Length: 423
Image (cartoon, rainbow, N blue to C red; front, side):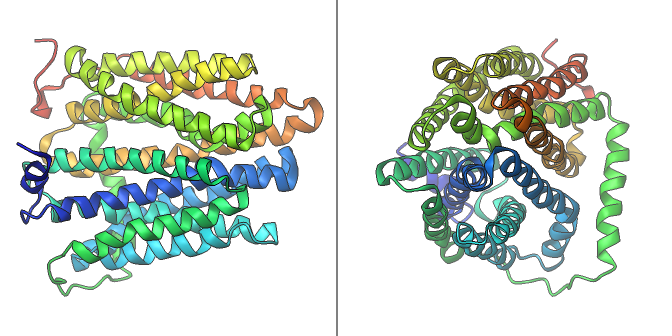
């Protein structure tokens, strides 16, 4: 069967353009994630304000955006569920990402920090509606395949924008405008091609706000009744803390601590993305072969080694080795803990528990990035570059706590409906 026929078979309406248009939004939003969140904003702030103040404000802006998003995510989801349509909200938050993004590099820098917080908050909020549109572009039997296709296309977006920035030789300031334009361009198909059913007519009420938060509290209580699930989610909070932090600060660390140029850093990040894509196939195979829990423990061990190398030795060759280890584990962590979550959850509550799973990943960013940036802000005036080493090594603490929490968690639970790998 050829690729065209395969994609047509994945679609809910038999049209190849439906899953492709939906996946192109993943391509679009990873352009923002890579070019702005992982690269340009940290460099802009540290170059403009210095290492101490630049890192301080990077931590504050990131915490504000992610914290506010984590707080209102249940409400945003409830709003779209009421009317049954997601595209209008997806469009609103997409525009609210693109416009501020293009204006970030223009003075004064304080306004740029505010605009970045707005753009990052809107980027995170848009993902709520994008993910919720999966049923509109796939059938119950093709959800996983379409989701995986979107994930792969998203990685292609990262590689694409890295090549564009490298070949174009764009300055740090220009990268914000390039990211905004490309995000907008590749986001267009989902709004033109994907069709939603008519609105249900229900409207969102102010009374739904406390109800949304109460549902989260209720789900957390229910999760505590499932064997090992709350322990796993707590462990995930700590080890994804390190993952999310590295994604945000790697460019700053490479330029300000290791000594790479802006362009060299882009090339290095491109290589590490390719490593993540290639090794993702291996981690997926290993997870099926030995189980997601054992795979996750191996991945976390790889990250511990990578953080140690990156923190102890500030040389370019060592950074490349550490980056390759962290890059390889990036996909592995996402693949194995997603499957482990499935193994631990009862089928009739899978959706609501995955909501907590996603919320835990967001909430972890409230510790890691501020911790890293505040350490640099406090120590850099006294010790200089070694402040970055202390900050990187601090991530080992949360990583090891995560390892300790997840270690007793089994691969299988009878109530999940999944086969027990020990049998």
